Image (cartoon, rainbow, N blue to C red):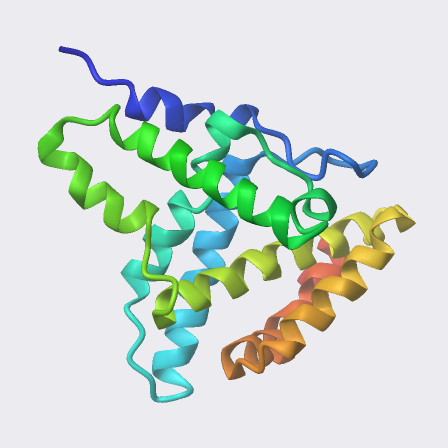
Length: 194
């Protein structure tokens, strides 16, 4: 028997993000997930090494790798629509959950439980919260990139995402902002001159 899980996951590269926005550069959910994984790892390391915490960085990274996987079946619903009201958000969450369940059926039985742990995480755990913050950081960095290229379409999104990140009151995010965010607004020449 042949299983299609990884063929489905590979299709993440075809799902475009920011569909309602004019973008200077298109972004797909595969590259987005890689960036979220990198940021989730950074936040977990910051939690452990700077804040004295005990985050499982591997778990945070795995959550990030698979956090958009349902979209190979649902597509990427734009944020303003997804969060328009609680009814729509709830219905879309159910649709995402069903898509993940369907994806898990495309694995051999002996693997599906292990993958389910990463694709259907405990939403109350620290690693999930770090991943969700990393997801927002990735969106914020996208806004900075677009604004740096002169695309003011992302100005309101930048402000909204920044407010959301600050409202989380996560010292790991504050540390990331203080130490790393500035570089995302610089050109290559400016990065090299620092």
